Length: 254
Image (cartoon, rainbow, N blue to C red; front, side):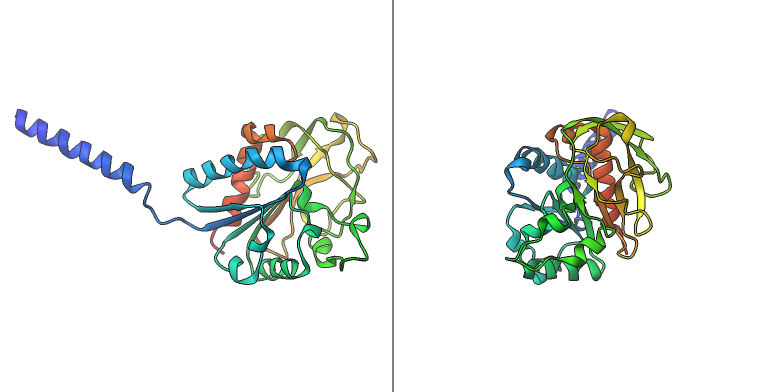
């Protein structure tokens, strides 16, 4: 009886060890490329975001490449990734060739998650030194960025309770951040998932209808998250759940 019990313990331990080690050798579900900005205003957030995304990749079994080198945005390289995360990387910080490669990637069904400064579009970013990327402005819902108010605490409200990214989040989420404003609401051109509650912070120019998270359903599995300036967000359980949901949804089977 003792021998049998000992044998059972050995087999159970062996199984646990096998399960533990095999979890580190599972084939990744998909590959994700994060290309981050080099702008000084965002370096603290990006430094915090790198270990955040690395942990997310480990816990959710996907392969991650994290870089601030925009040369990674090319047609051949993008083909290997299911999801492209544009982390504070403004559209005008990519060359025309890189913009064309990303546009083709999205048009061909690639997953895209744009965070905060990824949404810097409009006349103030036009320059005689480069051709303005009009496609991206249209993709963003045909809106133009308007200077944001000071960094402050505020609340955004989950509007869409059916979308996979937001259905399990609290209805109201309070954060301290830069509350991006635009010349108009993108509603009508996009599917709005969450809006900023303008009664909870001071605006430069009140928008009234103030979407802050949305999807362009013309391009499945693409999502823009306007919140994301402050490094503390990488420790905010509701925000981290939002970003995790966005990445996993963008990388889901299509």
